[in-house]
Image (cartoon, rainbow, N blue to C red; front, side):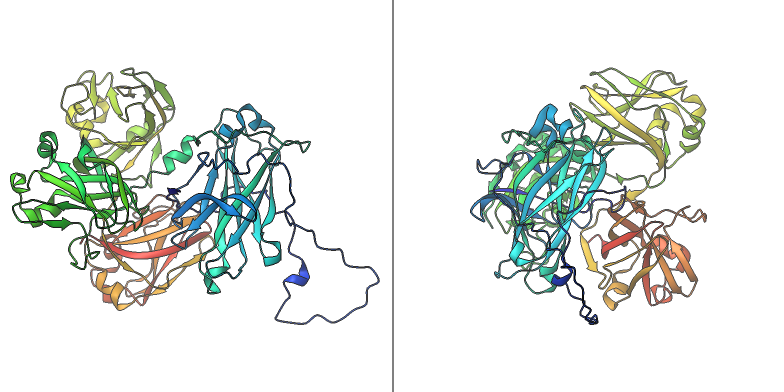
Length: 633
């Protein structure tokens, strides 16, 4: 069984969408319970509803060989489900099973480019069979979208599907690529299956398990295209880059690998090893241990198994009933961080007393894929920025390329700003070169990669951040002395997709959450909706806390409205979207954080004056899945 984490819900309404399910719901199968239409005579018989029951047909992919490596998960959107994928027996044959573990929205992606090769450009439609089951054996209707990412720019188009009758489960559904939506050879185009509406939850049947089978890629004449099911999912940069989930975490620089923790175990089993000298040297105040992992419960922590202070768990939270500090875990439950200070709280500041060994543990079966120790740095994201035009470029190892400063970029380069670089490189490293500054030719953010030992840029292999102050340390605060432009460089072959400059907004690392009950809601552009404060929420709203919103919106923006505060009706975090020019919330299209201090700036420090509740709003259609008050424990 292959387990994959899965966060789903793609940017609703971002493009004109064209795909449609095969067959509409017959009127007599969904009667209007609110009224009864008068009886009239009609000599013309009503047309029979289209039969969408699958028939035996040759398929491009039928899963009979058990292969599923060409599938992947899209793990960015806020309402994404954690799912388990496997090939199982269903309806008399093999099918891909999509088991929903968290009750949210599953998405499963298929790499059409790898499956079809050059024939990907011939695809005019995609047919597949979708079926469902519920653990209690009952049936509920489900529906969702088939999503295609087409063309060089991965433009999105969608098609509705549904399985609405037990007698038509499974059902055949069809996605059609209209003019302008065609797949392009060499562009890593993909399609996805999303299960958006699951009536089983409301009807007491639990979450649906989805089955995908008999995928047929057809050309414009209806001819079946042959697929190679032995391939592995590659996908576009847009897909893999979006899958990096750093929510609730800090960024890490100067990483040192801790290979002894790359291991696995069963529930409540510990495994690890000796702490090597380079890791001990990296374990200093301000450092953090970061583990990339999987666990059947989503939990992960470390065990100090022979410290001078005794055997103890660190970061376990309340999983063992102890109620001690929680480790910092991302939304996807794939990365966990444990700060030096959390270990020192129990073992002391002197690492020589920590016992020389460390282990990992969870309350479910677990595996650690990567372990490192590094310095904690801010987790930046730019909600407001200026595009550095002309900076889409690439180079080989130790080669430089870039663009000339524009007046807009120079104006944005001020104290407190940060440069954001979207990139890939063979080594994961990236930095900038000031090639003709008054201070001379120099690298900034290279760290010790070239032996200089200067400051490190904040990089995760997809996005790199370099604060204004880091450049100013070498080139002075006066940007007029920085030269005519800027270049990028890495120690491996690299490519830069975009460079932006803007105020350094920082997502906070948080590990304590209080649910804001009743806040799953939605609205159109400039419409507000929300929930009333509860005593628990008001108690959690203290200095240092943040209002954290899991959402989607057409524009990617979201903010809050204080609709009846003592200070009056006002937006908080709107930035300049309404022309007011106030501060921006910190958001990335899926998660938004609004600090207590930002609200207090307009409503005062006394939350009793903030009114009876809070609302959300955006300048495009939006949906909020949850709101929590988050803080550091």
